[in-house]
Image 1 (cartoon, rainbow, N blue to C red):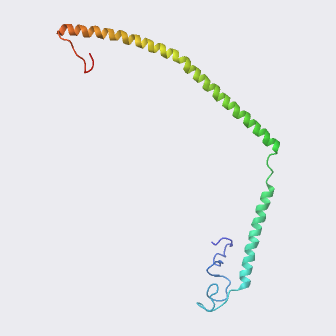
Image 2 (image 1 turned 90 degrees about the vertical axis):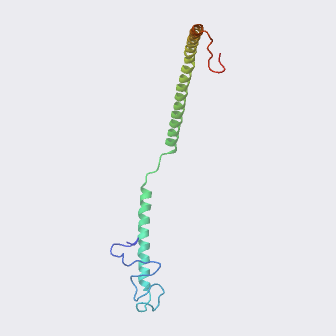
Image 3 (image 1 turned 120 degrees about the vertical axis):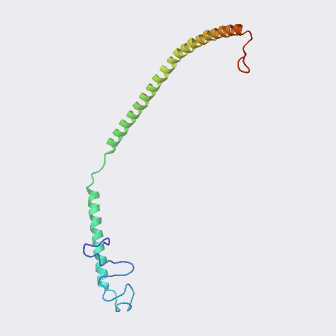
Length: 156
C-alpha cells in the first residue's frame, strides 16, 4: 500500500513515473497522445489529491504538537540542584568507602608479611638441617664405595 493513501486507494498512487488514477486518457505524465489513446492529466484531480495529503499532514502535525504540549514540565532548578548535591555526596561516600577498604586490605597484607618472613626463616632452617643430613649420607656412601662420587657437572 502506498504511504499516505487510505484503504482502497492503493491502486491509485501518485508517483514520479505516472499517475494511474484520475487521468482521462492513457499514458503517464506528459505522455500526450501515446499508448492507450491520448489524454491529459486531470489537474483538478491532482490538486485535490495534493490538498488531501496536505490536510493529512497538518492533522498529524497538530496531533504531535498537542502531545508535545501535554508533556509536563521537568524538575525545577532547585530539585535538580538537590539531586546533584545528593549525587556528589553519594559519590564521595563511595570513594571514601573504597579507599578505606583498600587501605584495610593493604594493612592486612603488610602485617601478613611478618608471618611470611617467619615461615621463610623456618624453611631456611629446615633446608640447612636437611643439607647437613644429605652431606653425612653422601660421605657415608663414598666411604663404602671407596671412591668419591661426583655429582652432575659443575657440582662437587
